[in-house]
Image (tube, rainbow, N blue to C red; front, side, top):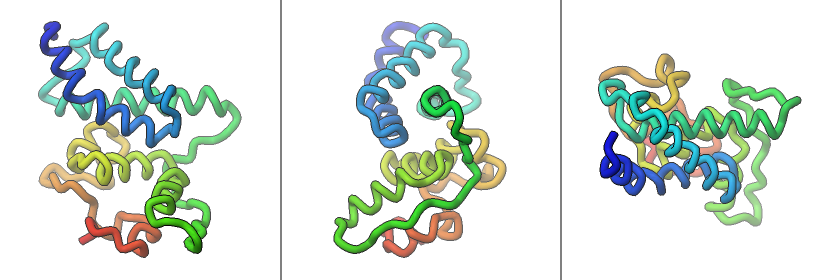
Length: 169
């Protein structure tokens, strides 16, 4: 990867990566550090990115995801990371703004579900990009013919459907 290619990749993807990491961690400083580490990884080992396997954004999101999980494990060494769990705590619907409720509900989701919703809804990533950045989603939720920006309604959490989100089919 040449210097102009790297600069182009940085200016094209830095904001998407920052927003994704910030929403996953809730920390501006942590998000900046992780985004910096993503681009350092690309700079140090550009041959790790294979364009035949997917888009550069998906590759960088995969790095960011791994760094977010690593940081979480370092900060919570005795807590189990239950990515496959679909249980989240109750949401107090009275007295809160809809945006606050959605933000709080998204933060309460297990990491794998939170990641998929953030990428699909906030970053407008296609299902193919989301699956490319996280291979754990690919077998259950993605098919080779699927390139939609949102999952079918049955894959969304019940609270998301109850809020009447406009992107649901």
